[in-house]
Length: 199
Ligand SMILES: C[S@@+](CC[C@H](N)C(=O)[O-])C[C@H]1O[C@@H](n2cnc3c(N)ncnc32)[C@H](O)[C@@H]1O
Image: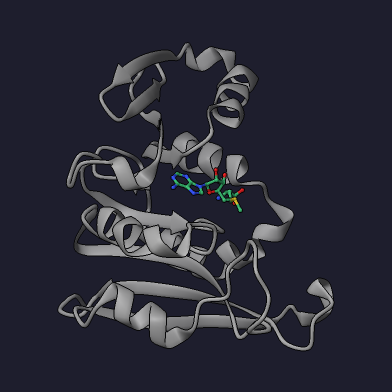
């Protein structure tokens, strides 16, 4: 999640990111975090497992991070406060605890959450949206009905029902990933989600 209110982000540059975001295969998530941070944004992440978060901060000793204990997990924070990662189970995050953001980036999280926890995940993330926020979401769908495991295949209908009627869901691109997963059918779609009443 990124907040550019106090940063240097150029809005035109953000619009052109809609395309480049889909080139994620060539980038690790940490590269995006670093790029958004270097542009002056405040970047806030959330991850259930501590090890990769610790390793990420160890890669950037200049950030001089601290670790704070929270009632629902831990908060890793750079000394300038602009790069924060919550280590917690997303379903345990109190509503509105994360703050509000201009943009939300979700690669592989929505489709990794246990099905029974997914609605709570959506509610927690959507509570971070403002009237003009954008949410970039990767979804895997139309996989074999009998397949289990991550990434979960989530139908567009389920997606629509879980996000609810207040949001406009726009597909930016759909890729056929069935060959990669050696199944008859499996697709990957990238969504741009915005509040319905926004421009
Ligand atoms: C497929 S990985 C994607 C990681 C990252 N977004 C990326 O693109 O590299 C899914 C991640 O979701 C995290 N996750 C799954 N369930 C979670 C939960 N309930 N709370 C917080 N994180 C969770 C896992 O720990 C895992 O790192």
